[in-house]
Length: 158
Length: 289
Image (cartoon, rainbow over all chains, first blue to last red; front, side):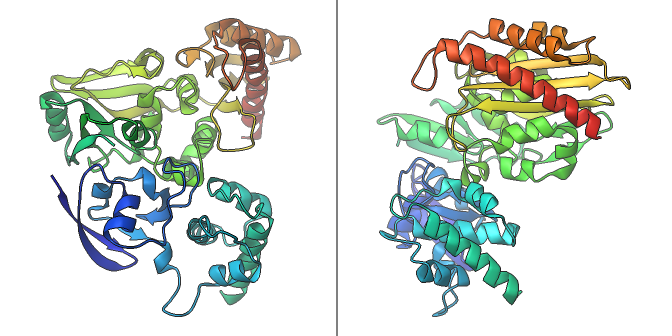
C-alpha cells in the first residue's frame, strides 16, 4: 500500500505517494522527476545521491521515502538561485572539476554542507569531509582546488 | 527490495505493541545505514519496519547527576559535534567519528551500531570500556544489560522480539579517567576495522594506574572485554613493560578469522599494538586535563 507523504524540498511544500520500500533517491528521481540527485552505487558508498535531510548530509539511497514525512530536504536543484549559479558551482566549472558529471551534484551538495559548517577548512579537512564522495574521473585534485577556491571566495563575500 | 510495511510510532508503548503483535518479521529502523542495504538484498519477502526515531528521547543525549543517557538513534554526526560529550568520552566520540563517511554519519547511530552487532563495530569496544549499560524496554517492563553481555554472536544481540533498546547509560567516569579508541584499516578513511582496541585508564596523582578497562573488536565473533589486559596495566605507571604485557594479553584473548582484510596472525598482532597505543593515548589525555 502506498503512503501519502508531505514534505519540504528546497523550501517548497511537496506531496507524493510512495511505496514503503522505495528509497528517497528513487522517489526524487522517478516520482518527482528531480534527476539532479544521481544514483551511483545505491549502497551509501559513493555519495552521488548526497542531499541534506533535516540539515544533515546523508545519502538519499540510505533513506526511505516514507521517512520524508515532515522533513526538510535540500537537493542540488536548490543550490543555484534562479539563473545565478552558486559560487561553488562556478568554481567547479572554472577549475574543470568534473568530467562525466555523475559525482558532481553530490560533491556540490557536500561542499556546501562543508563550508556552512567550516568556512575555512584546511585541504586535509576538506578531503576527509568529502571522502564519501567518490569521483572516478578527475583524480580529485581539481575538485579540491575548486572547493578551496570556493571557500576563499565565499569568505571574502561574507 | 522486500515488501515493507512502515510505522513510525511516537511512543515507546506503541513501538513495543507493534514489535510484539507483528505478523511478519520486524526490523527496527534507526539510521538505516546497515538495515536498508540488508533489505535491498532480499526479494519476495516481507518486513515490518518500525522507525523509532520519532519516539521522544531516542535522538537525545542528556546528563543526569551520575550518567550520560544516550538516545540510541542519535546520529553520529550530532553525537560527534557534542563538545560536552567529547570532553568526557573522547574515545567513544573518536570511534563514532570513524564510522563510514560524513553522509553515513549523518544517519548512522550508536544504538544502531550496537544492535547490528557487527564484530567490527567501532563504537562497541569504546562502549565496553566506559561500562555502558543497555536500557531495554519490552512488553512486560524494562531491564538493564551490560554492553558486554548484550552481544551474543555475529550480528546477534540478546533483544527479545518484543524488546527495544531505548537508551545507553554511560556512568560519568571518576576523576583522572580517560578513554581512547584505535583501529587498523588499510585505507585512511571509510573502511571497516581489521582490528580495533579501546582502553580506559584511571591514574592517581603520581601517574599510577588505579583502574583500567580494555576491549577489542574485529578479532572475535563479538567485541570483547579483556580483563587480563586491564590487569596488566593496573598498579603500573604504564611503562613499556606494562604496555607490552597488556598488548600480549589482548593478542592472547583475540580469536580472529582470516579473510581478505587480514589474516589471523596479522589481526592477533595488530590488536596488541593497538591496545598498547590506545592505552598510551588515554593516559596522555589524563595528563592534559
